[in-house]
Length: 146
Image 1: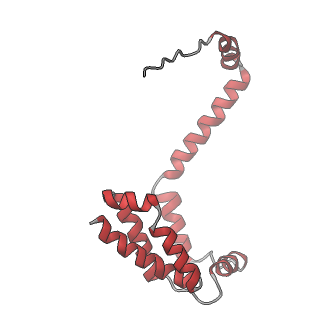
Image 2: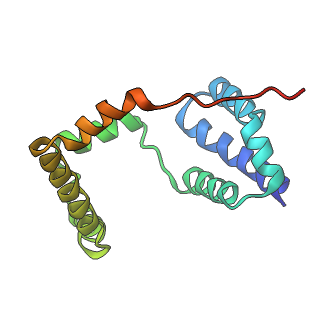
Image 3: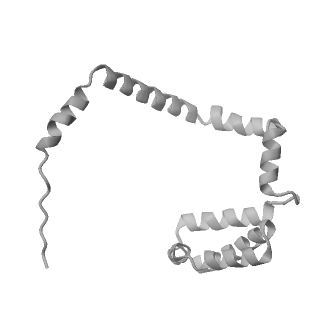
């Protein structure tokens, strides 16, 4: 199953590279991709991440459309002309920042780091303890057994 999906992945990777570059570069990229030891070993064991990667390659190869100006040009054009502020981007930002509550976890983590830094600066007991006990650490003994 993994080998079959690997062949599909190579084909989709070639189609994606052919859309983005010239024929020679896409051929070399596919040769390097399909001879990669990681790609081969993960394909043999049919791991879930491998199938996900193949599906992402397939969606990028089949669902992307290059306008002829280039990807980098399109990105900079959208940033500098502020085309990235539209209703679709607003919906994505709404889902990312408000609906899935990751921002709550980030705020808790940042407040915890700030509180930890402030308490560490106020009383340097942890740093003092570390400096006093670093000299008392004994090395680990290792043995060689042939």
